[in-house]
Image 1 (spheres, rainbow, N blue to C red):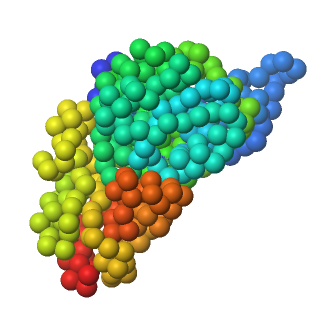
Image 2: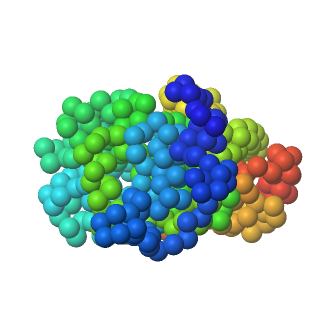
Length: 385
Ligand SMILES: Cc1ncc(COP(=O)(O)O)c(C=O)c1O
């Protein structure tokens, strides 16, 4: 199980960061469910003192995700929001952040309702428009926080262009890579300084764990994030670390099927007479299709579509049988949701309208079911719209 330096992505997913357990040879990293570690004598221990600070299961996951994101060090947190919160501690009072306007609602809530109280300021811009990003920078800007593709409108930000702007202004580029996963897009390879994930989604992939991870490359960022992970203590549990480690082993395989089902559903919905518009970067009709094709290896399992009214959306959502009406995404099973009243309810209505998150917008996270079953379910539900 020795990896060569040029091991490919699916091999890294399976093996990176993992060694057979030193005690027994167990091929799977055990769940080290302990709060503390017995020391041999005063001042002498095996590198493990207290489990908020060090845990072998969590460390294995952190090495694994750092490798598959092509970063230097990973830090696992209790949720995606805890991971984003930890990244925010890299800022100081008076600092300014430029943020994708169509970011996840919970990220907006953290920035707008919590962090503004600590004298941080945020400008929300369409980061797909690099000229607008450049204009939003001020002398106080220390971070550019980008989500691409965005949730749920699937806008794409040019990562190399964003990294160049951040560098010119001596700011960090932070990319929330939850929607794409490192299988489809590795922002650090385009110049990002930090990648964050809600591991709740594709990395774990089985809808049975909440978690987050931060991957960093710069030594000073790594030092701070290690300090803050321990100081704030919002760590991922050993069991959840083990679940996500099991998830990343099949990431490449799962993403291939998410891509295939996402594309097939987008094509099906685009042709359907009851659907006004489909947002999916794999469609040639997507305004940034070429950029997505350049920057991503596959277009993923997330798509959104416009039905024109809340009533139409309600009829569809209440009549699907196989697709589950639920928040979240990136799991093996297909989910369907209403962003305006669910994931993005915390975004003010006028902002939602400006972003295209209308009352008639429906989002799908395409799972791994047989595509014919998914199409049949949507066909029968759309007949009732
Ligand atoms: C893009 C994105 N980032 C961050 C989060 C927050 O992650 P968590 O729910 O694990 O806290 C989510 C959750 O939906 C998300 O979709």
